[in-house]
Length: 109
Length: 117
Image 1 (cartoon, rainbow over the protein chains, first blue to last red):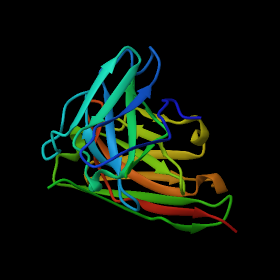
Image 2 (tube, each protein chain N blue to C red):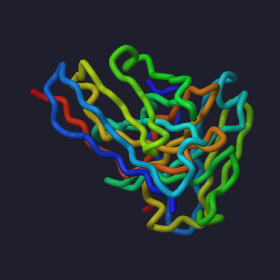
Image 3 (cartoon, rainbow over the protein chains, first blue to last red):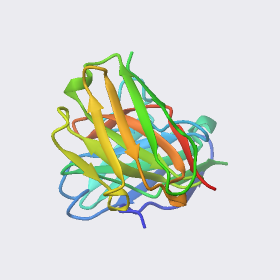
Image 4 (cartoon, rainbow over the protein chains, first blue to last red):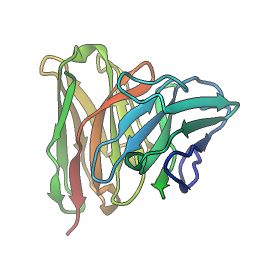
């Protein structure tokens, strides 16, 4: 059982927007502003897309955005493209311990 | 350019041992927390262990405590994971990553460990 809860799958059509949720507890997501989101294409290593809840690393499209409310963090992808089809994992860092969500498979229809 | 290159994976029998290495370059290795994360075939990401910059503190997921040891050699810019008493459920791709301010900022490409007789 994963420490953080994500939907198993989401889907959207090109150009649409989707949101993936990540629910933790007051001991991790709720207490620390250290939620990150990682994209993983099949057979590839994960890639950081969002950190500290809402910040984008250099080179990541501004179509990706993050937010947090209480114990739930969210990743929104706007203007969906075929290359966005991948698995997405949320990650919470709390007091030297790391928790991942179970992952969400994004399908671009 | 930041690079993390894992090595040492392979096929090992249940109960056996394996030592993974992660060679770091492109940054001051001794300044950063480092972490091992694994991913079983078809499954999600799982935190395994992390270690402070000077190696003074280590943290492990409960399922590997007492069997795995994380270590680092800052002079060699290298991170290690000694895995003993391996079980079938340890079969996974193992990734090393660099932590910056609580974020797994850079990932290696991973090395596959298969535990099977």
